[in-house]
Image (cartoon, rainbow, N blue to C red):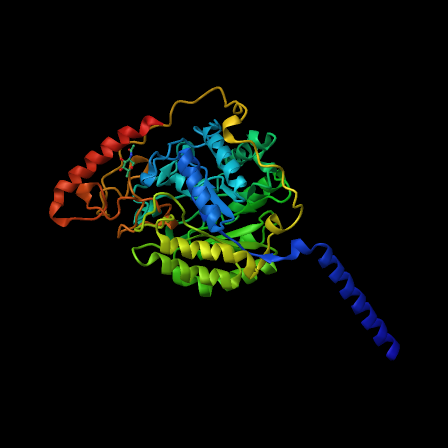
Length: 482
Ligand SMILES: *[C@@H]1O[C@H](CO)[C@@H](O)[C@H](O)[C@H]1NC(C)=O
């Protein structure tokens, strides 16, 4: 009786020692870790000095990640004086690499500041809700001009997400993007720059805001991930890009998908996190996934700093990385946008981002803590770069100008239903900007309508409808300037 017990204990001790040895040998990879980061979805279109100012501020604040989105960008969004740029494909399958070349410079500058990029390969809100990209034309997607309202439900994406040709087009888009070579990193493709790019979001808030909360194809993200993952170098992650809320961010299909590394979560329901996040973390750990709270924020004069603090406290306690929506210059108190001049909010963000790595985390992030510590030398300065790679010589004509949107219906906001690239706002019924709805970039929310903003001044009555129509016409005509 004594003997077998001894054998058992010896075996157990040996096993424990072996495990300990393995862990010790791999120490950096097993350190649980967390971090703070920021969205700044069109930072690559900023003028150089502005972009550098934002990146310097992010570095000083201790942010480790920066998320951008590949989609057409209008110029001078929210007064940022940024350049406009068209999407990477128009029409579908005809690629225009100007946007990728802009992002090359951002990658270089972020890397020099120890900030890794998350690059979102496509934006759900380009599919006929806020924005209309080439897929809307090719696949006859029903669009809506009432994106922040009930009208979003008219933007029926069932057919799109269940169309094999559309999926194949999307996979080709993704391959084109990740194959883009960065002259500052030995001409390696984006798919093989793990030191500067954390990974790729399949789609920003894919399938969000469908009728009755329908998810047209819950396997769509996983199917795209299966095509994408084998093309990436090790150490580069496939991220989902989340839904618009916790529930549609955490589809069981994402957790069951072997090609997805990170299940991203977005929500602007600040009170939800403390109850809804813990079970998500549990599920992720069970299924070998990781979680990033990739979109959250707070807004309002005097309430933004406290709103951010409250949410970040939850994330820090749980050890979940977080990325605020969004850091952008200029600061805007009335929106989900924040920059250094809101010193209260900025101090909340920077204290938390600096503290995060030391607090331990729910997950391991060898992309930050492990593997080789030998980073390649910083890439050459942007000014001395080799000529950009050749762009498809057959340039398509500029994107079609969408026909005049119908006058606003249930909303009473002069610009709310106009895409940002046409000078409009992205707001909800209260003219609150809603990044979860693809917004967060409205600079006119608190101006009366007769000053081009979104606040209803009732006595203006019918005259306003006329003004709205004029604005729509004028702005539509201006849109062709890409
Ligand atoms: C950019 O936007 C800001 C604020 O919306 C405005 O004041 C400024 O005139 C615009 N600049 C240009 C060049 O249009």
